[in-house]
Image (cartoon, rainbow, N blue to C red):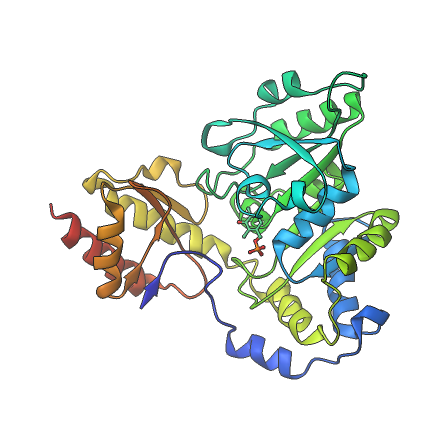
Length: 336
Ligand SMILES: *Cc1c(COP(=O)(O)O)cnc(C)c1O
């Protein structure tokens, strides 16, 4: 089976499992889990920030970040296809009381020219804008890398208007692999950063919210309130530490395989290799649900996102042979 639906489907490698078995654990709600404490310190240092808070999911890390920056009845701006407004079950509104408005960036790419006109300054007649969230890489945009110059312009804009900046960095690892931009640069530009250990890095569970010391303290309160206070979480943190140490440098392989996959499928007119920047290949296929079902019968799983479109992702558990198999199966089904 070649599972290209998502980079979340990976299973721990033998080395990662061994690290989990060796984990030195304690009760993290008491702050006494050595593996969690080490993971949080390592992640904070990597991004040049004070502190990090380990969470069960990226959604929780995002929502904690948003609640730190925006109070109930205030507003967050983000891209129209952002994970925080599409795939977190309305949590910003339901749990944070946060109002949202969106801009539509091409392929999810940030354009501060679209953002600035949306900003509501404090006055008695409007919902005041307090923060802006950016996704890097952009998932539904197709693994789009946000241009560093534009992120810097956004920081200047946020400073000029007194706004907070949240980075949904579930796949910031892929942005780093594609551009070489140091993680500390992202840490410098954003007030709160969420990262996922369970996407391209291949850990079974876990995310982090990375921020300054004062916000991290408040983040622990919000995490507990959301039900995210975990006990001997060090078994999971050990997987995350292993992922940080061993699985960042290899991401270029996933990107090369995604490009190869897109080039191989280009003759069928379903994708554009020029749009593939990282590990995500968006495809346009009429009646994709039927094609996906037939492909799954032949051992290839792809993700259906709409009536005529979907995506394929490369990751730790897909090798060159898997890509060749996927190309063969899809090529036969698309028949040309
Ligand atoms: C996967 C993902 C998340 C977090 O998802 P969880 O399933 O809650 O861990 C957040 N943002 C983006 C862009 C993602 O792709």
